[in-house]
Amino acid sequence: MKFSAPARIDLAGGTLDVPPLCFLVRRAATLNIAVNRRVSLQRHDTPGQLVQATQQSHLADWPLYTEALAYFDQSPQDFGFAVENQIPPASGLGGSSSLLVTLVALLNKSLDFNTSKKVLLDQVTVLEHRLLGKPAGTQDGIGAIHGGMSWIHYHRGYPVVEAVQVPDFLRRAPLLLVYSDEQHHSGINNWAVVAKACDGERQTLALLDALADNAHAMKAAVVADDETAFFGTVREESRLRRALCPGILNQPMAAFAAEMGDAAACKACGAGGGGAMWVYAPGLAYEQVVNVASRNNLQTWKVEIDFDGVKQEDA
Image (cartoon, rainbow, N blue to C red; front, side, top):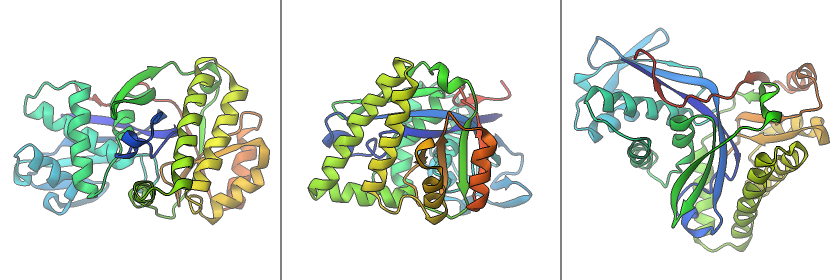
């Protein structure tokens, strides 16, 4: 039995999906898009073991697996798993959530639980909170579960997922990511924002309201297939993010963004500080972006939109 799920790029409104911000910010909404870097997980025939790449380790040493098994009243000694992961750790692409989605989907299937996407998200959200030990958002799990482009808004604070048709201008060419192997931890950065908002810091609350307004503007640009307006909202998202978290771009990423100038919108994925950054530069050739990235010691990746979401590979 084998399941897989995609990574995601948070286009606009990230962090607003984290409670209690989704309750506090009246127009809280997030727009994201799943991409074809996937994590896959399958049952392994050696109970109690986790196989990844060429290494094998004890499943009991990995909290993500032990928490999920405990949630289903199962023992690590009754399961073995093999994982293949195309999402680098701490990349800001929601990789840990994608892995958790595959694991929970596989466990539901193994235990003959017939669950909806909503129930799967509820299960994953509970586990995200337990693993992080702090409030956790829902957008990473939604991207992994649904695939495609998701508009996530909140009815009385609870997530409502709306599939959005991907505009033609985002289908014409692969999406570009630049990557720094400097580790970062989105949960820590998000928690700092949540704490400031709960303390009533006016600047933080104003920036969160502005992020919500910009997310709505981005969705309107997508629906209208208006590439110029969309480009402007990506740049505004990036500006607001840097105001909210001044360290969201590490030094190589900041230098890259400065060199790209007005020709590109450079948006840190996740809460930033390292990992991946989405580069939206529709007027530039791929080789131009690669050259600037190389000068700043950054890798460049092409990714495509993944419309599948979580799925059973061997069905």
